[in-house]
Length: 119
Picture 1 (spheres, rainbow, N blue to C red):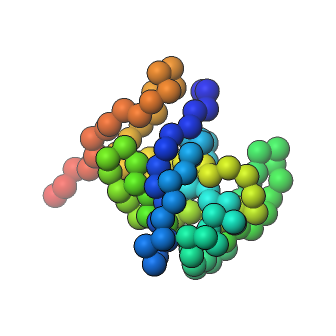
Picture 2 (cartoon, one colour):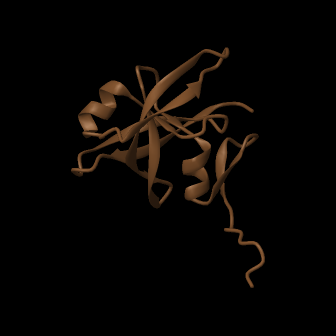
């Protein structure tokens, strides 16, 4: 799938926000926020989580909560705080916003929620 960028707004717990270009990466689990941006937003790590980087290298990265506004919707979602690199939009945030990716048109497609059988 070809990667593409979208404009979104990330906000920290004190309401400090920035408009950012997010690289859409459905192979990434969470939103990824580079350390410098996380510091400006005042993101507060709540734990660390092992991650596997492209190429197989393993590290442990802090995990925080960030507010994401994208495509007319908002959600609070966990995020990795990366040492550097671009902000990434991963699968968990996309699913939380009920969005899928059309890889050919390089755009989002709204999806419905799904619930299994309820007794």
